[in-house]
Length: 256
Image (cartoon, helix red, strand yellow):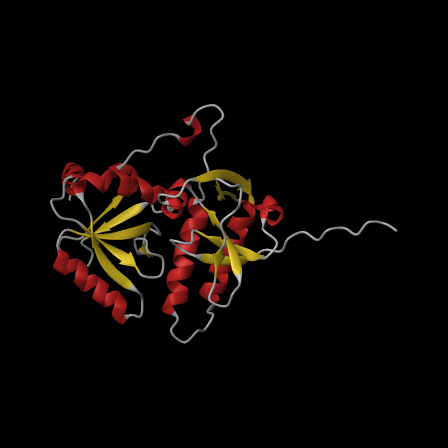
């Protein structure tokens, strides 16, 4: 295919994603987010899109048979721009379209949606985003739920180490109620974790209709912000839902 033909094909693919008529995305049951795959040739982090529901269901079935939790969701036309833009917050940079069919195409997210320069958000406004960490958490939870025997593989250990490294360098959002109290989530075993969020979209998913204030906090300050009974933090509880044990700083005993 010559250069002009490639450009024409790309334009047609991009147009089919902007005004698709019908478009379906493969969802992960482990994260409640689009299922993400790493392209073995380009190493792009891609989501899986299909123009035909039957093709999407076939792919979800294939993943399910490989012991991944997967389903299909239909994308609504007037929500497409917001959906594509949200992929930047997940660390995704590619879209794999109709993979496994004779209409298979791959495009870069930046060719489809040009995002505002986050450095131009305005004076006094702090942008909190952790796409690299969010992406690592997605891969980690997909693999953890994939391991039916409970085995901790080398891949999982590497993802856990990478996640912790991103966490230690990150700044996150925490929620505060109108009465000044910080929400906590109680687990089945009675332990409590304090929710933190990688970005504004994850915060809004959690807040819903509740009136919650939003504060930005670097990871180094999170131990000081924990309520006394919290065992640690839970990252994006309505998404990747990753729990991390965090220890509150010990109070120094006064000198006698």
